[in-house]
Length: 324
Ligand code: TXA
Ligand code: MG
Image (cartoon, rainbow, N blue to C red; front, side):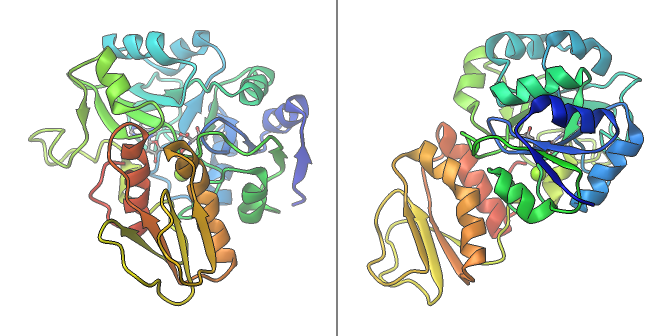
């Protein structure tokens, strides 16, 4: 299949409405979207990405009026988060309506919904006129794509269309909050931070293996968390003080401080935590392109955006106990 590249949200929407998955930019990462009610289009997403079928998709909406189609009820604290944050890099998991196919939710009776803030994403969603189910637009297991070029690297010839926008601003996937229990649970940290969520609903908990209580037969609240994500080919090593004096051969380094004087295949000293987050996944891809064997990543404090950044670093190392 030839992959069409277009800057036009209207042209991209035409592909989607013909049942073809379309990659599109958001403020977090690029997504691979299909009409949530079109099961054959949803199937194509799983095939193109080689995604396990029990990993649920996030449904993107351009307007609150779509929410009633997707959920059977809006929990009280979900309403608070919606009022405080949307449009935002914030996905809320709620009880699904009967209209949402189980294919979109990985078989769960819940659905994750997000209203992105990104202007081109909103134009695209409005042109589609349907809720758009979209995982990140990478091959399963690869780092999420933060540019259209990264989407093309993974999915060229596997999807019909890429909506070309700028590189994404945030660079880490959205915050995911489960709103189906007695108190909200942060399943995946992101740019809407735990501290910001706590200011709206103080009882919110950080997911840990025991959070969902005693019912051991329950599936994990977020099936995606059992898969290795965000991982480059190279081995990722998180480093904190005292820093090693010399880097391994064929190594790359990303962090906030200048650490190694020795030669590195690739190096990025980031201006800020935001810059570090926005650069991480493209850095992983570039290190792989250059054939680096090891990627050193400087640890950061787990406050604010730091919680999300450390979560992705641990995922890349393969430490799967961390929240999704
Ligand atoms: O920023 C983002 O969230 C991007 C853009 C495209 O919106 N999307 C994204 O999708 O990162 P994806 O498929 O890579 O991650 C979706 C994750 C799933 O792996 C799962 O952990 C969680 O969101 N999720 C989705 N629906 C869920 C549900 N019903 N219950 C629990 N977790 C859910
Ligand atoms: Mg993903």
